[in-house]
Length: 623
Image 1 (spheres, rainbow, N blue to C red):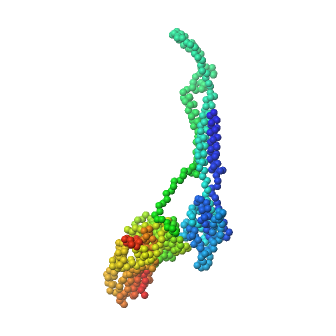
Image 2 (cartoon, rainbow, N blue to C red):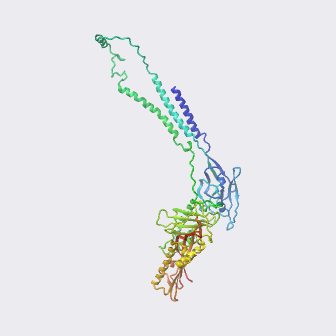
Image 3 (cartoon, helix red, strand yellow):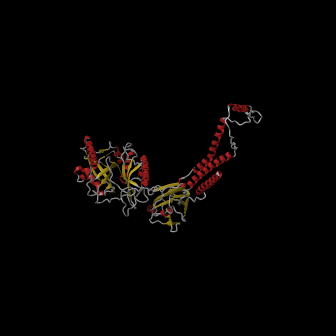
């Protein structure tokens, strides 16, 4: 009967293990669903619509093959359409029948030169993400709603035509693992039953002794009778072996009957049974080797807590200009470009990532640095960490982004606050204002990066100071000090900065007197609003961070017809003007970039200075 149960266990093991293996092999369906992207008329660009990419659940895998460079980028559909508005391209859409179709979209905007553009898409700040390959490219992505994909080469050659989209299918077999495990258990049980059956069978084939007959009734015997019995036993013949000799331990024809031999035979049987169990353990381990989670039942996933929004999305709210990942990529590009420009004193390269006062400061620094080796360049732009990102929530152009950037873990270097603007879909972001944060400055509560903020109009009456008047009001405080009518509008940090400018002016005046040059020359100062328009990003509390520029000018000219102004002790002015002296004088202009936190109109808070930076902007000879 033990053999029967062992066979039953083996059969069940074979069925269960076979079923588990079959679920992972012959019964396993395809791992993904595939759709080929086909175009009839080749174009330099192919746009795969968001609906096509989201035709099936799960992440999308795009596989493109072709000759040469292959470029793939993700972007908001509206942004892609704007970027391609001046050229023709193929657009892949999804029909009501679930099939894809391609059509050529003609330009809606005329190119500036009236010719078909050949624009390389690589390096654009518009892309949420991008990849480049040679001859082939495979990109796994999870495209959200409203995001499309651009496939191109270098803008000159046609886009790859061999493009395939794949979506994963659910190939989980949650019962395969349990079936194989249970099958392994039955296999182990069958082997145990088989071993027990063999053991029982061997014992059943051994010699069987008959029970001795019942002893006859006996009577007590006396001593004499006992002696007679013992004598009879002593005269009995000895037992002989097979050779006719008395049996002994030394006779090779006899089995050893010592106690050690018996123990040895008993010890052999357990070891044999242990060896028989090894195949069962090995088979079970082999079945479980390489198991993946999708062959086991999975519990219901724990609900992921939704982040608490700090600000509700208003009806009709436009999308933020950039995402956090996109902003990090842009900052890395800006940092690398300016680092190379600083190394080679290349103003043209710096102009690809700077604009306005920030660009003028670097141009001047490069010009002076070529003659004055120790002239300090403006602060480098770090790429390590964006501490605060506030993109403008705007679907059109120009778009503005405000960010606070730290220099890694170096706390001795002040963080930089900057604004950068993208003027149109085809341009990259350029920094227009950048300044070092004040030690005690604290930014107001700003909208999160996923929401974005609005730009406050330059003439907004809802702030403590209109953004387009803020620069001139603070310039008046610098020139007049506590006599300015705007003095009480600014906090102590702003007034301390104004005082530092006044002290610097006083030091220069004193140096002129010490050189006895005040009788033959005059030195005057004036602060005025810069030519750059203000950039005002609204805060949550109805205030704003406003970036403005000031021009702090110094005019020195002779007061005597026989006097001249020499530049012997001013090598930077000499490098910019190209002259050693002048009979008419010079005007030096220092560009001051400032960031203020401006409260809402009616608030008791004062206008706070957040960051400031000052660089030599120009030196010109008075004509």
